[in-house]
Image (cartoon, rainbow, N blue to C red):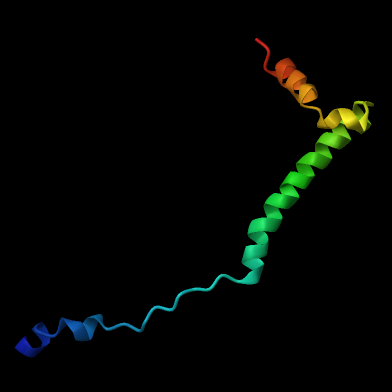
Length: 77
């Protein structure tokens, strides 16, 4: 081996500069749109199940006592 090659590790380690990856608009939209759509689907499902299937009033869907009662029914010992 040649000593010149041993003493020059920087030549082997030279790499092109790493470019920072920019976040696209579509990625940002997905981060906000998908959770928003999931929350809207949850709300729509609650309304559809309670009003259409349960034959109850729409105003009762938004009451905390309604969902506390449902929780108590499901998880009662």
